[in-house]
Amino acid sequence: MPVNNRYIENNKQIFIDDYLSFLEMKDFPCIAAKAAHEKHLAKCMVAGDMACPKDDAAILFFLYDFIDAYRSSDEIYHSAAIIFTGPQMNNEEMFDTLLWQRLQALEMLDAENYKYDNRVDADPASAKFSFSIKEEAFYVIGLHAASSRQARRFMHPTLVFNPHAQFEQLRASSKYEAMKSTVRKRDIVFSGSVNPMLQDFGESSEVFQYSGRHYDDSWKCPLKITHAGKHNPSA
Image (cartoon, rainbow, N blue to C red):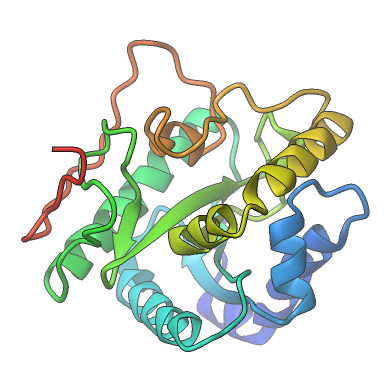
């Protein structure tokens, strides 16, 4: 059932509290997300139905504000969550379709204002691809109620944007491998296994990790990058 706008306006904090409680679960494996929340740097926006484009511009400008704050901060861990009020997800394929619809819409709107982040590759098939908004690369994580991964099984469909540069900061400080090991061990405890789609940046395209769905060898990412000034660091 669609959620009306008045309900959304009156209950936005409930959706946000649901998400923050999800991060606060004792065994939730992502320690970076927990760290961002603990420092009040896990920013949230509540949007309407994920299948509807009406909030795309508002989402984009929320991300622009988030990027400005992130760039001016000395802290490492930051994240921006777009929490949708619907629809109810029946399976992973449904969420996967809507994830790429919303990312495509955001990409096309952003391309009217900015070039692509030249620190990453704009080709979704590239092992150095990352999603760019306001020339800032992001690693995107999808959450929804029908996910096969326990760590991604959240009641509201959600897209979490994690600045790619913060992971590079961790690599530069030699903290990344320790964090990765801890997260994967916690994921085994929480979900029973490590996500088979999980790879490090530079090993394979991170698009395989965005929705949490297990893709077969025939899958092709539907995202089409329209930005001017696209960059291929591997070329």
